[in-house]
Image 1 (cartoon, helix red, strand yellow):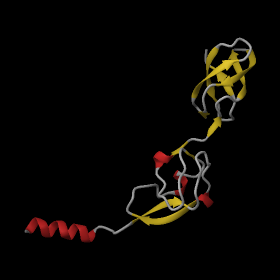
Image 2 (cartoon, rainbow, N blue to C red):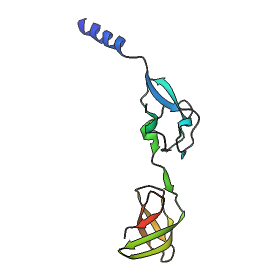
Image 3 (cartoon, helix red, strand yellow):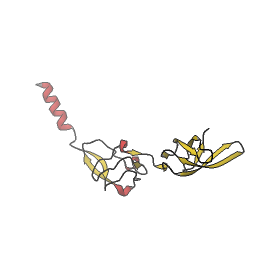
Image 4 (cartoon, rainbow, N blue to C red):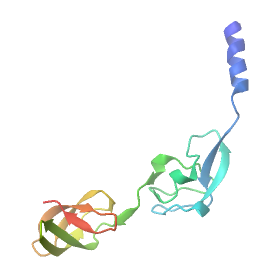
Length: 138
């Protein structure tokens, strides 16, 4: 009896809802989140509660209007897309070689992706830089 009364007291003390962020409109996959895309909600469901945790990130899947925004639904923005023609740079000391390549996957800043060198048809690994350029690693 005593334990039951304690549990009931704890349940009454818990808030009925917590603050969080939800999509202000339907956000298709690949959308970069802005402040206009967010609205504050009261929800028991887990999710982000600070707009700075979401603004500037890209949606992984479509997030429907009113749905709480969770960190797992967001990712760093992709700077290069699959099958995109890009300029590859190889640097070693004063030597710099530039070539064209075709990306074999998407990539965000800091990602290492596979790229096909269009001149030699060889597959190489390249680092996606903050500005979207690619630097070869091999």
